[in-house]
Length: 258
Length: 152
Image (cartoon, rainbow over all chains, first blue to last red; front, side, top):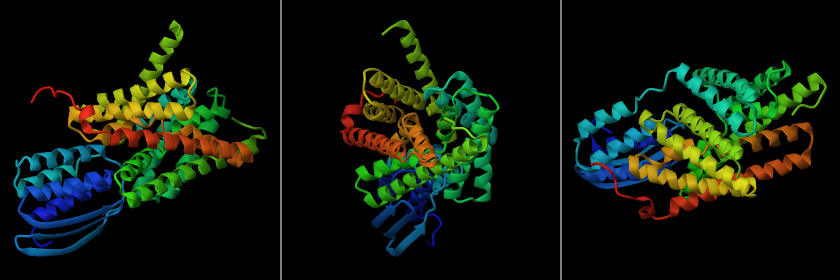
């Protein structure tokens, strides 16, 4: 679109930010409509699916033709969703000109990811806690802590290399299993299964599942189906990665492990 | 319920609280919402434990826990003026069938087809139970989750 500070452009970029950070379809659509209603836009039509936004609109007498954009799904950033949500509420209350809102949006969409050490620490703590919750002993949780450290470091590395989602999940679950299995074989921990279960929760498609359900119940069946397929594929990848390595370990050690 | 199991419940809930906050950090939730995501996750897990303690299977317990968790998410969403997603996504993690995925893969590769199928079906059932739980609570009218807002 020609103008840098048009309300259509603003609405479009807000939708884009929400979508790529993992918001559900109805929120994206409602936010875009709400923003447009707050400014002088004569007509507006929007259609959103999981990985694209389609918009047509008329602003200041000029008709803007269909604007399509592919929005690749990246990682979930709830902080950005919160920030855009707050901004859209302020716009609806009439608190911002288009220029101000654009500047605020720019800030919101650049909210940083937490530093790597913090991410590693939380992944490790999460792994340990889940290992304990699913019936592991404190000793198992301790071992899962280290699997969590290895996992988050690996995910960071894979993300930087732009590795495909499929391969990332497959290899990361294999890595976690290898890590947990190796530590277990060295005599650390009581239950290998609890250690590994705790550590793979980081990979389990909880976000895709939740968002898919929300899309389905809002009648966005296409987007719901896309995310559901995503959840099933990721779950399958994890199962394959884990199963393969367990099989490998048990063949190598010549005994059944559980 | 004896003292030991009450202590057990308390400890488990506290760990679920901590694990949910750990995931809130991973998903870049704003710091001011951490406490509330933790409460959501802890409450969900507590309901799960109580339900399974009273003889409900994993599927039923997941369903009940999801109902409680989603209701709480909606209340927090209203009180904190933040999207429901924030509390829901973080709080759901203790219930997501990670163990089911693990055992399915394990038995599948170990050649125990019957057990693999069994675990695979259970995983899907739990996922469906979670889906129904979220769907039902999110479809209820907002008035049920609104209360007098403090301040402002």
